[in-house]
Image 1: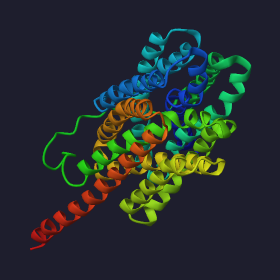
Image 2: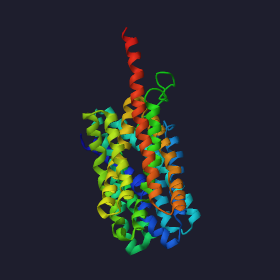
Image 3: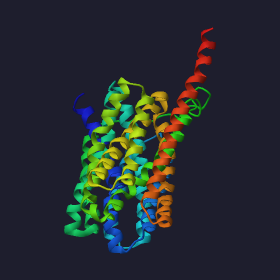
Image 4: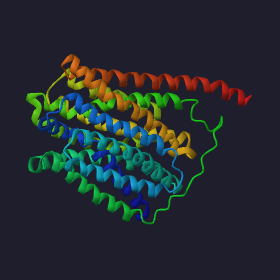
Length: 394
């Protein structure tokens, strides 16, 4: 590990800070203030989130087909993303916010897939794969940063100034990345010919994709409304902002920790453990509305969702090392599709039952189904591979 390698990793981290931690998730701590000041309904808040995820879905899908000039295309999307963050604070129109959130999601999808695949490919080329988990810590850094800064900025410059302040900070991160990546050369790639040996739609991969998509649907409900839910519990209102900071702090070390556990133990068992811990975290506020329970819920949520992103994308790349951008793109696309419908379902359930417990129960149930599918898929794929191996041996 030298300065060049560290620069590539840090640049990747900063891009995920901007695209995921700020552009995407800063809405979570800002949403309560926006809803109060602009008199937005819970449903309108859900559409603000879902419009972002629609864009993310398209961006993640499109990123898998970018084979040339990846670095320049990536940096262009970061510029678009940062500009959209600043405009959120300058323009006072719900319709324009929906459009801006869509653009932010579109660029975030490109940034996540391209940045993570570029860094993972670079590290694999230099035999430094064990460091790949660190790039995903950018998600946690961004969440913690937005969670810490939003309460400070909102008091002084309101939610509009908070968006602008976070946008200006994102400009600094963009410029830093440009400097750190100035010597990085990303080779153009030729699409891998599709065939029986290269298709990702066989074996365990389809099961992993479906489970990951359901994870996207379940986890995003908590990710979108966690702070808002806590804020609307009178006795816990003072802990609302801190809960998002706890999510970020838990997320920062989670990627390298889970990657280390993957290297020591079975990948599937570690993923199963992460799913189980996340289910507990999602359901805790339903079972108990105390300060400790909601903060523990936030911790488990932050520690597991970034871990599952890291393990799922990392394991997929191990299965198909020559198609890293494509497999990450497909995984992220299904993940994003779940995120599109998650907030909409959550807002409908909250409106119908007049309780935050209903969407959380739905989210917990969805992630439970994802865990079951993961385990069934692993068992079925392993059982199916045994006769094939015996046939080849004979």
